[in-house]
Image: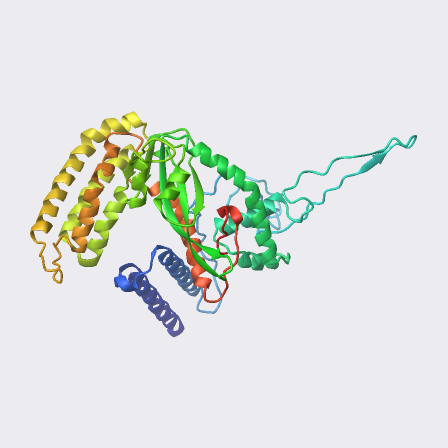
Length: 473
């Protein structure tokens, strides 16, 4: 009993500590809070530790006083294993099917089923291509042999499946090439990082025409999303990296029931100037949904090169984020009221997501438009308040001053008001640019992975699909 009590106390103390860590990750001081990716990793570690503590407690409870253990109660699978997964049936028969009294052999009256997911680790296999040669025994007319299949790397080592796996692991699963080498080494394949880099470059060369074709196809759409993100690239001859930009052009018509499949194309540019967006969008005429970056303004002007002036629909999530930052910092009641008003509009959008454009357009003017109009009146009132409290002394900026952070955020929303309400007149337009921000997140995670290794590993070339410059590995 003393040993059991001591074990339970230890488990309770450990769980209390884990709960304290979880609270700190969620509600700690802003300077000590984790970002989204770090918080997810913290949750994984905490959940793993909690599961370990629970397993230890169950093992302790299952132990008899005499030192023996009793069989634990079976835990039913609370999830659902998809039907398309292959099933390998394992039948476990009793050791003896003769009736205990010895009268006859027992017959089957039913059975119990239990399903558990099983994972087979990735393993290498060798594809041996054999091309038999044939010749005629009666004459010397020649030798007959099938032609060599067309391979992506003629005479090379990898199959097309291997090239795809390496590229997806690096760019979609955030596994740097040197880590892949370690994984493959455990599977018995000794591959060098430079070899994998060469494979990625070859795959990129063959994928480039497909990417170009996808870009042409995307620009035939009527409504697109666009955003840009930083990308470290090697500076030739400098031995270090510099900042480039990946411009993401996205089509996602699922919000209004469009038939075209969602797609995204990334184009590399050495800078963030709006001229790069103008070059990428040559031939596109329609609605472009973007954030409030001023580099896009020229696309809506009469001097736009490569097409007619575009209609720019701005992102309400960015406007909300401006107010959220203020509220998180000082608990501003003005910011809280703005967040509440925006949330009411989003509730209406959630109900009509996936409907046809005409159905969405029938709901928005009736339900969303009054809320937007009220928000406009509220915004004008708050901006007039901050202007009245704005002091000429540049060394004294009150919280309600137009020079304060709150005044700047309200001015940001006011300057982009026309583009923020386009969704009221076009059923295809979304309220925000989340469809293009979501595909950018993996690139951000890759960038964080590189920066976390920057102190220990030199930058190395990666996939050549960024056109003229190569990103850091």
